[in-house]
Image (cartoon, rainbow, N blue to C red; front, side, top):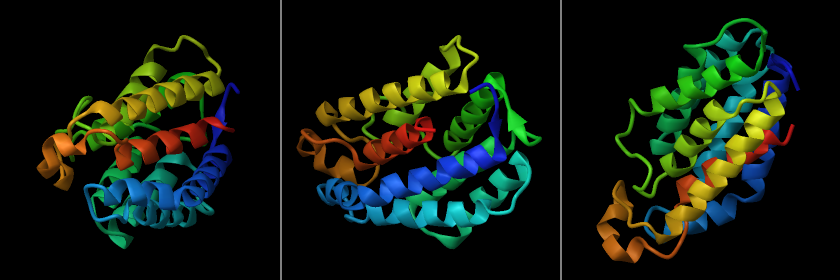
Length: 203
């Protein structure tokens, strides 16, 4: 795929919602080990809002801006804050109705940059950043001009990052209070964000 259109992105969102909904209980069960146990539900709610907000928008900037604000305003909690920031960051760096490979790289880099304004967590802290940061980095160094290749590289890196959280000690959120007891299972946020990126790649 040489160009990503607004319609393609809406389709990506719909596919992502389907994927996350299918694994909703899995993500909530992971979250229940050290948190509120509602992460899967929160992701489904936020992505449902995103899909609705994306309808009938004809350019990337407007669509992503609508999505970001809708997610942040209509849902609550850290999930909506970070996911909303991701889409708003994307809206800051793109325009028009289609993106080439360099545009897609900028899209995801912009999303990550804005998420970093919301959290100080990084790789190794056992959060969703363990999936997102490697994904964007893998995309940035991929030399293909095929967007499917970029997304596939991101998905592989995100999954590896999520898997690595199994042996990590949580350093952020409620989970940090569990210390060494937070080891032995995947972080729910890393799991859901890696699944989201994998769904993006499955165009």
